[in-house]
Image (tube, rainbow, N blue to C red; front, side):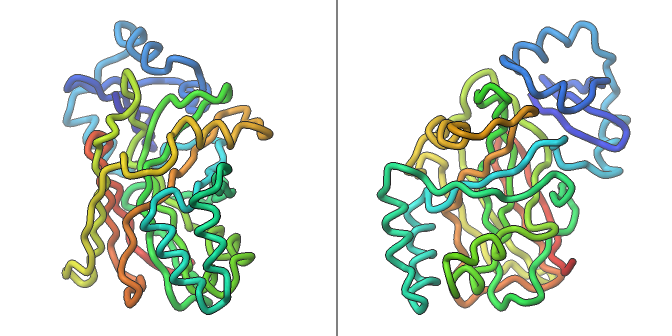
Length: 281
């Protein structure tokens, strides 16, 4: 099942049909057994014809988030560890990332409040005081208030590698600013856990030319999804649930940096494609 948040209302898509769901977003998604709940609602929901539903979607999707916070995990893939070590070598901080990758405790950090999150076909931002900027495509978990993973979406963890590389303590400035996160295009709610062979793919286009393309299976991650969620909820309470980006394995080459006008497309098969243009705040 897929839940879309639109300006016209919430849309549920399942087995080729669209349904309107007239509930407040936080109340709708923050529950145990979300898949079973939505399946049980089908008989009472108004079916929306495909052309009308696609019209809602075409008029603009909102990010699938209500009042939740967005958090992120770092250095969860080997390639991410390599990239962080490369960018931090001049500041003497490279060893930090090797230690995090092999440590029992994962790296978790706050990423965004809902009002700073971009949705599908909306603009993400690069910092004016940064010289090296990249998108980081990430499978993103929706974890309800009891700590259970109930859904998935696509996340773009926009990052300033120049600022983080200058000093690891600058991580909040490299990661947290207006439109530094994007979520979408929907919230995907499968009956069970997402297939570990699911592929994440990212393409970056500039003036119609493909600048980067790569893909990876999510089973390349070092830590389990449940482990990451468990550490996040150890000493934090999220009354409406939380979104957790799980880290990236797709890193553009060191000579690449985003420019204003670039288009970033991130695809995760069962979820769809999250597309964002790049600009300044």
